[in-house]
Image (cartoon, rainbow, N blue to C red):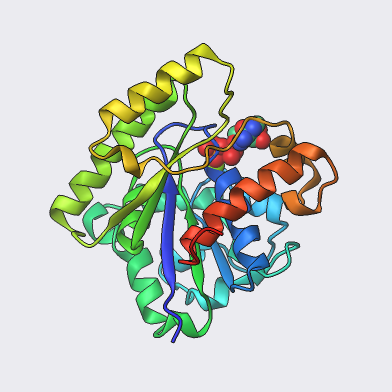
Length: 262
Ligand SMILES: Nc1ncnc2c1ncn2[C@@H]1O[C@H](COP(=O)(O)OP(=O)(O)O)[C@@H](O)[C@H]1O
Ligand SMILES: [Mg+2]
């Protein structure tokens, strides 16, 4: 029996590569033959845009309002082979504005539970988080089994990482003790940058367990921007950089799928 893995991808700071990582892992997992669902919890809905995910319903139809639809009713095919999505929407801010935030925070978890055995439909569910500790973020963490914290080795991103890890600890210490940190993924890494090396050392010193910092680091390559502007997965792009990034993400996808590194 294949068990579904529900993974939230976050950092309190925007622009560190959460969406890029979510989509690239989704693509590489799909290439391993896994059935992947991306849930776009960010009101900016960049994941939705890059995937070309379009349907009658968006995530807010599942999580807010009087007449909510089931999670599976909001699942659409995307332009990326093997990747399905629940499209994001600006209206998800309504979740953050709900009077009873404590209850609202359970809605994604409940929506997934209401599906029944979600592993009949998907092998991996990846949740793309917004860059803040809003109700949408807490709702995503409550729905997840594990978390990938993405960071750039740059001062403000490291601060965002530390804040995110704090939120994670708090969620774990209060309402969701089973939530585990899959690891910290270093993105936009430039080997020759002294600042990057310094910040990397800082991360390794500040985290509880340096082994939580995942290998390999994802290098900084313009291909990550091409992926969004062309709205195509890295492995289908021709540039050398896109192939390099694709193979880096493939290693993380194998680890996520529990397939050991070869
Ligand atoms: N490894 C990378 N190398 C170069 N640019 C990157 C890399 N990862 C992400 N980017 C770029 O950084 C910007 C922000 O990435 P995005 O994934 O949208 O971040 P977030 O979801 O955290 O806000 C985008 O323009 C994206 O193309
Ligand atoms: Mg994003």
